Length: 196
Picture 1 (cartoon, rainbow, N blue to C red):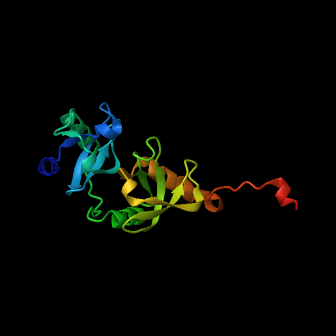
Picture 2: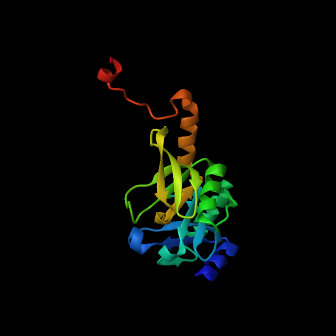
């Protein structure tokens, strides 16, 4: 598989990746291969509007199949060329998962972490404050763009997918930075407690 992924990378072709056990047979990811090793693959994603929209890291053990080149490869590449959108390497190192999470948080501000075998419908978005060989600590941001008051610790090896650098994550950061003093969760006080 690595040889084929490397061919796709050097030819700058769109690849379609399937993870049937996790996503089902009718879901896939389209994008350009930026880097790959024996454990992970880093892609720059193409969204439904044919724009480059962030990055995704998948684990090779989860990949059930992939197509190279992907359907509509020529069309997608042509539209991106017309729009002047070019593949960019975010220059993150895939060799160490803990270091990778810290680097993404530092460079991009936010990272989206999926743990689909533990929570198939949800994800956590935030910045990684600490990571070691088994766990990581995440300061999470909500869909209202406010930081949570508490941090949370998760198992490093529950991670099944990592995303960063997308328009949505940029929007969360933009809104959060604009909030000033309201950038953290608004804590609701009990009026009875407040009057004691």
